[in-house]
Amino acid sequence: MNNHSLNNKENIMNIDNNEILALFDEWNNALQTGDPKKVASLYDGDDGILLPTVSNKVRHNHEEIEDYFVHFLAKQPVGEINESNIRIFNDIAINSGIYTFTFQDGATVQARFTYVYRRIQDRWLILEHHSSAMPE
Image (cartoon, rainbow, N blue to C red; front, side, top):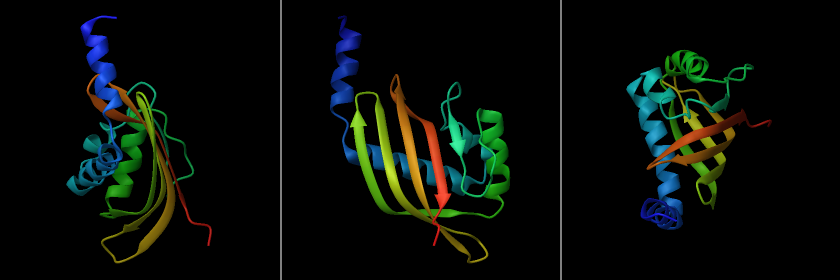
């Protein structure tokens, strides 16, 4: 094992829940910019999948993910996590729970979410993001 691999493994082992929780803040802050490209850049460009809250279409790549956010960002959403459950497995982290979006018009939607993150070099990217409105 070379030093780079050892250092990377040590860095991965030092990950804590706060680091993973901060990834939601990064994503939510990207929403606030109103720039769909900025939001899409947080998703893995090769393998990222988005199963969005307010669309029936699965998004398979940056172009499709960006297209979803063009429409979603027009509502000026602000997200807040209500419940978070984080699990970390080496270079994969999962955050599942419940969040609420508040829109510019005052409407809100509460949804279940799962983010699966993959660490690529020193950056966490969203590998899969599933969001579905609460059924009740």
